[in-house]
Image 1 (cartoon, rainbow, N blue to C red):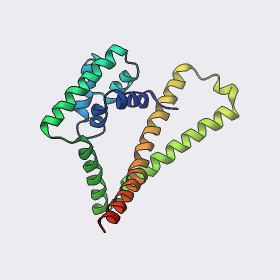
Image 2 (tube, one colour):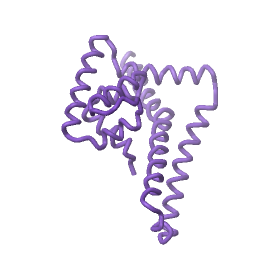
Image 3 (cartoon, helix red, strand yellow):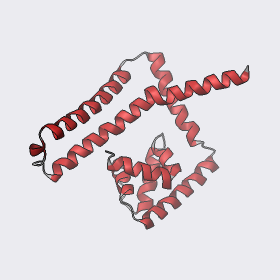
Image 4 (cartoon, rainbow, N blue to C red):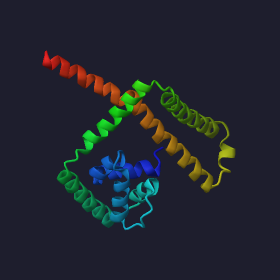
Length: 183
């Protein structure tokens, strides 16, 4: 079950890829401001609210968001900023810091988040299958809260898994290919 925030991010990646890249890096505040401007929202700087608004945007708002994306793409090009390279450098510096400091806290936190997501998901499945009569008594607002918590945990677990397993595995494969080509 994808959360509304994940849906908004998915839409943003398709409609406004520059802003989607910016929101995941050091330019997140600028991206949120652009999303709010494109959708005609009050400037709050709240990333979750902005992505939720993207998920419920009208076609006219999505066109305005695309125009904001184009403006930011041009501005970044004029400044000579490569957003993909910036995001990769951010991940690389985080990994380098972790290797240099040898701090176990980030990995412990990542495993806790992933374990928490799996535990909450399993508990929901067991509850739904084991006590369907009690599940039917949960009001709509309760399900909304359960969905938000699960969506948040799913998003954080996805990022933690990508950091530790996804990106580094792809990077190692790329390094091996480059090494093979250079020989």
